[in-house]
Amino acid sequence: MKVRDILKREGLVISYEFFPPKKPKDEANFWKTVEELSQWKPDFVSVTYGAGGSTHDKSIEIAAALRRKGYNVVAHITCISSTKKKIKETLETLKNYGIENVLALRGDIPQDPNFRFPENGFRYAYQLVRFIRENNGFCVGVAGYPEGHPEAPSLDKDVEYLKLKVDSGADFVVTQLFFKNEYFFNFLELANNKGINVPIIPGILPITNKGQVVRLTQLCGATIPRELMQIISKYEDSPEDLRKAGIEYTVRQCRELMDSGVRYLHFYTLNRYPATAEILKALGVQR
Ligand SMILES: Cc1cc2nc3c(=O)[nH]c(=O)nc-3n(C[C@H](O)[C@H](O)[C@H](O)COP(=O)(O)OP(=O)(O)OC[C@H]3O[C@@H](n4cnc5c(N)ncnc54)[C@H](O)[C@@H]3O)c2cc1C
Image (cartoon, rainbow, N blue to C red):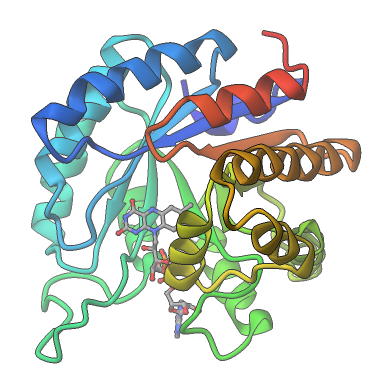
């Protein structure tokens, strides 16, 4: 089923992001996570894709396996290191596996100083969105950044570029993680003011430890708000207490979103089930 149709339904829409297991030994844990989280009947699941194409085959294999198990799948696809020909082949493969949704991304620019954008490819995600919409019948999602993309000159300009992705044919937006709902609400308002009228799904990271929060915020440029910083400092020497307080923080974040009328929650599971499961239980989500 296409995500744009799922998002039109009444009630709460739950989705999970997974990444393809890196090593054969991670595979059993991956499927255990999928299985454990299946009790909340996710409306869709998404599978990430290495920017340099490193996880290409594994991403497709996992997306196809999830589809065979009956999940509505969103396959991420990046364009930064791909030619149009390669992208077209990937889309054909996904289609043959019955996958109807893709998240069209540019991918991060590699650190390599010799990096050049592929000649017969794309520089920005909006071009990829246009290409997918012209060539295939996919429902297309794109990334949004409540605090602005790290390379963008300003949040306002970044939202203008988001509008370009939507005008190029994007059906929905999934956001980068954020730890303060104010950023998301402000982003919704900016998007609305710029005429973006597709659903915007908040990306939620269950907080479980300091290393994870610090590493991920450094990677994506999200702010750690004072309240969360205080929790991290308070329980720095007690990982179990930090985990408990971190999950409570995420539950409060989700509750506030839901109380404000947000109907979608997309969990960055990091391929682990306990934290997401505890949050869904605490929220009283019944499926
Ligand atoms: C929900 C989500 C899922 C993700 N999944 C993956 C994944 O599976 N694999 C992966 O490698 N990465 C993933 N990423 C990370 C993403 O690839 C990076 O954030 C990347 O740097 C930007 O991708 P984008 O699609 O947002 O790019 P774009 O929308 O192309 O934007 C990139 C930058 O260019 C600017 N820009 C856009 N259009 C223009 C224009 N016309 N002129 C000038 N500047 C412009 C934007 O402001 C931004 O700074 C994900 C991110 C999110 C939020």
